Length: 150
Image 1 (spheres, helix red, strand yellow):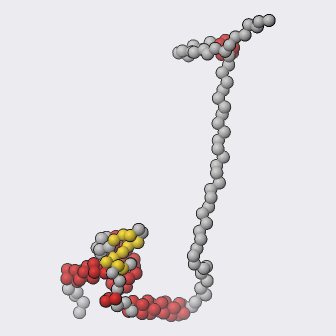
Image 2: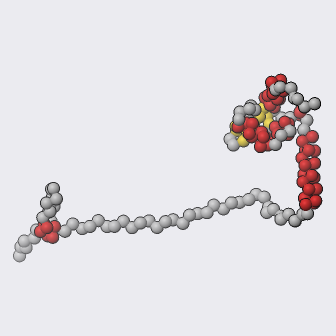
């Protein structure tokens, strides 16, 4: 009982001359279609605030709002007036330089970005040498034209 079985053979077709009988006799299985990976849900980062939630400010009349702003300015001037140049630390941050120069912190950042004031970047923060800032201030005083205000 010998059966005459053919082993599958590979048919190589050149130049598009396909032999249909060979393809029917031994059809090639089609490759499985890849299943697309379902999109992963995005994980949302939780923002953890270190501050307690702000209390809503009561609505103030224009006169009360002006008084509140005047009080904020007065407290800021007092804080600036307390700075003693002789007792400053060797390395200063932006708020200390702003108080020393009596300008806003934004003005200090802008001057540092324009490289007008000597500073060093430590990580993401700016640091200033006390001696360097005072020398820079003296050089600005000498190099600037006299004021025309009288």
